[in-house]
Image 1 (cartoon, rainbow over the protein chains, first blue to last red):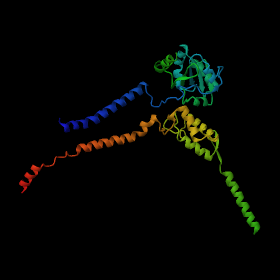
Image 2: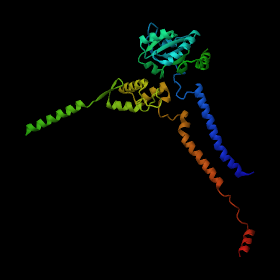
Image 3: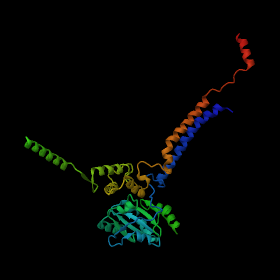
Image 4: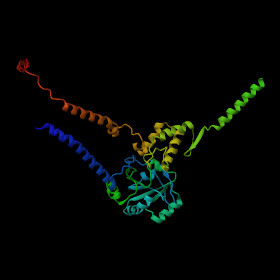
Length: 187
Length: 155
């Protein structure tokens, strides 16, 4: 066996293979970012897998508010959606929220740092998919839920356990690939 | 003479009183009134936390509304007498370790923290292997007969 030749081939081949593997890895990463499967700015909300935190929020604009006890007392799953009339991605998810409500999953809204006037206008314009709407004027409850921007949604199992969370609008891809499987796991 | 001295002391006392009244003892930041020492502590905590909206900025530096709220929470808790660890834990409990700009040393971050050591060891191994390869093969010494022949030739 010609050892020097083999080792020279290895010396050229191993770095080349490493560079190629790195390239493929980065390409896969960028592809996943482009398709929305991977978001480097996302982080896991530690609330998932735990019971909802303690809070009580008043209703707004004639809607009923709610608290931790009301979520725990539920017999069916509920989607808690943090939104605001001043939030543009919320407008984007509004038609899909209406579809979710129509499909039978109750949505309870928490209006984040919002005033009753603009909120009423928003609901009149983009529809009201919410069974209840509570007002978190100071935004303190949102912080206790680990919310860092609207919209964010939490799937709450009967008994008040948080089973799934998304930071960002509920678009059809997310609903199909994440929300529906999470719902199926509950039943 | 005595009267002059008393006057001097009075003057000094008034000067000190004015200086003390002009030096702020408390300041108002992000809706919370706190002492200078408390504010320093709050800034120290806020500098260790990530603003989750502008993710490469600290809570202290960011102009985002959420960061302003975080600063208010930190200051209220400092005034309430909570320790730095308690306040940082409050944030980590809600937002996970991502909120810390310096990741803690936990099993999840071992690879991150130890990667320099791993890289150093890998480099050392490469150097050692390369050096062993380059070392000239040690030739067997001359045998008794060969040494005699060499002596014959040379003489």
